[in-house]
Image 1: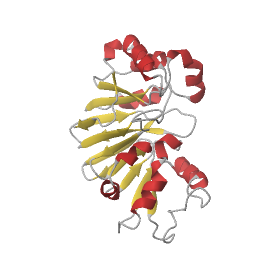
Image 2: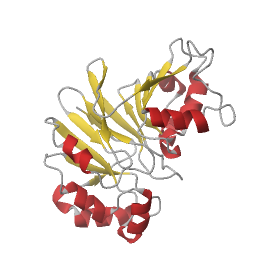
Image 3: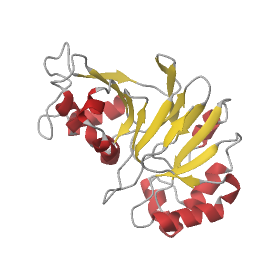
Length: 254
């Protein structure tokens, strides 16, 4: 199994891309602006999109990707999300006002974009790959994901703030190898982090103290213009966990 980081920034500008991961060649985990780095052929190969939550930096490329490949595929694309997230996307994106409703095109009985509901703790099996929604605590309904190859697992927090339930599940992952966790703000913006339900380095440290497994820790969703400051604080506060910044184009094989 291979996971390639298409985008991992909290914003855009220059080479910065927002959150998206490509699992093998047919699954997206979130679909932020990082999807734009894929060729049309690579986009055409996408069969499944798993969505952590409805915020634009995680879903921005879904409408354009679907519109781009609709005439190049015979098979539908399945969008895996919580029912709450799907309802937000239907109301605010696929509503004919912002974008055509591909969940009823070419017709409702056999749409090009099909919704598949995910629920916390219920694993989706795609071949030998196991994708399980994890608890998250954000300002809209949200989840993280465990991606399990059978040999090892990658846990992705999605957007979240303090969440004891997340760690209770992660600590039960016996084959945990990688942990990707957000830290969107610096310590100087802790009030904003709490209001928007994100993490800053001091809150991250509190969360990492709950980790009872050994894992390689990567930090994602850094705010543009503050990434160096945030990582300096993370590396100082959480040095015992050897955290590294997640990189655009980084590849995990497990």
